[in-house]
Amino acid sequence: MYSVLKKTTEQLQLQTISEERKRILQPLINFIQQKINNKEPINLNFICTHNSRRSHLSQVWAQVAATHFNIPNVTCYSGGTEETALFPKVVETLTNQGFIVLKLSETANPIYAIKYSDNILPVIGFSKKYDNLFNPISKFAAIMTCSQADNGCPFIAGAEERIPITFEDPKISDNTAEQTKIYSERSLQIATEMFYVFSKIEL
Image (cartoon, rainbow, N blue to C red; front, side):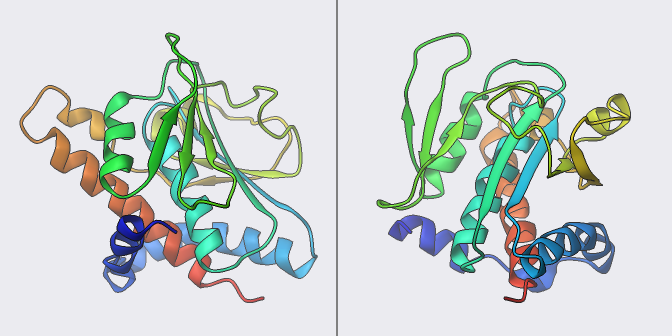
């Protein structure tokens, strides 16, 4: 893990997670633990409406948390109910927190390689629908990171489990003086909760 990113993760305070949030996170812990017990691959697809902010932050931090706690065979994905683009402020936020983010394509919906360690495959970030062929088509958990997607998608084809873990949209701060602060806070909240989830897994 890169040194700046390591410092970011060392500052996460798992003890600050409320009992209510722990209850919300427990189904995801249970899903991962069951896969570990059965020696099966763990595929997690984080889903939000536009696949532009919260779903990407969740995908990235879950992958980092799995690596940090040496949980094997975890692959994290993200998708939306529609395709837009990874919001640039998310890229900036992840960069500030210690990731190396490489833009691989210059299009309306750019593709990014989000690296957290020199010798580990990067997370590939770009906006896509949840059923895009880049994502798994079966044997995955669909983690709903926004209430709009959770309400708007009553059925996710191929998902073994559907787990609502919603976060407040940092988009509320766009075009305000608070934007950098709010995006950073939301990213760290998601990081803290994903680290909590994987810290509970027993090998």
